[in-house]
Image 1 (cartoon, rainbow, N blue to C red):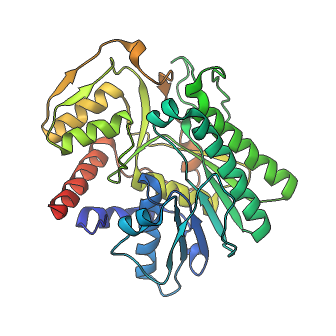
Image 2: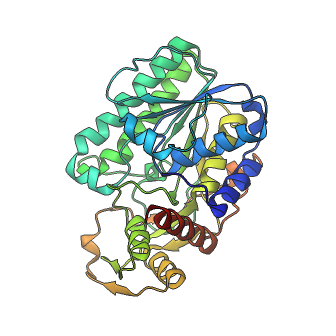
Length: 351
């Protein structure tokens, strides 16, 4: 899947401008895991665009479980600075090359995986992170960035205005759905432990609900289902009351935040990635997508207990990230509009 449309290209340029200190990556090498997903694919594309503007280029190593997925996503963008690496999180890395930076973004991040394979989800996160941290230690990696999740803040009531990074929250350890947030927490602790015991330079980011034009076939998150319905000219179906309040973030802002933290963040510190102009309920998000795409909404099930996620409130403070110079550039309307436009452009190319 190539994204050569003008909207996507302009988003990449905005992200480069919003990625503080990105010039420090010139001439460096970077390993990006999960490179075919929503965040990973945009990240690789941003680095490729940076290379197109500069002579001192970034060496990019993009990983995925299957080589054919990398070839499909980046089929028109192969250069001698982009290397495809087939890598399964559950196994030790078979590669031995050194890289200056690692951005670990791989792992199941969709509800269907949490339900059908909670063990694989949990152990994939933990084993994959441990294996890569060990690799970073052995190879002398300059800095390791772990992509965690806003779900680590757990199940709290709405009397908290926003979750700052110091918030510890509560997660039910005997709910199998907790495989995702609890494994993310464990991975953050692994990162802190490697930093303390092995003197690795590590930073953590906690993205909120991140959306964008790259959607994998098995992703069944609510906003993905809404976007798919809009793209396929179907009615948008809301399967709960939709009262859950969330921070959302367009992928261009999220990736700019990741690079900013990679290059400016303080070691052993976590940074939320969220846009203050993209806070809404799931119901309002569905209504926004329906309005932009001119589609109808139907309420299939008005039983809140049917909601798979026990997390009703997840609004993140981005103050710490903004102190590094990052600013959200895409409010909810603009981000959704760009997402749908890019997806339509890609669909038209395939027809």
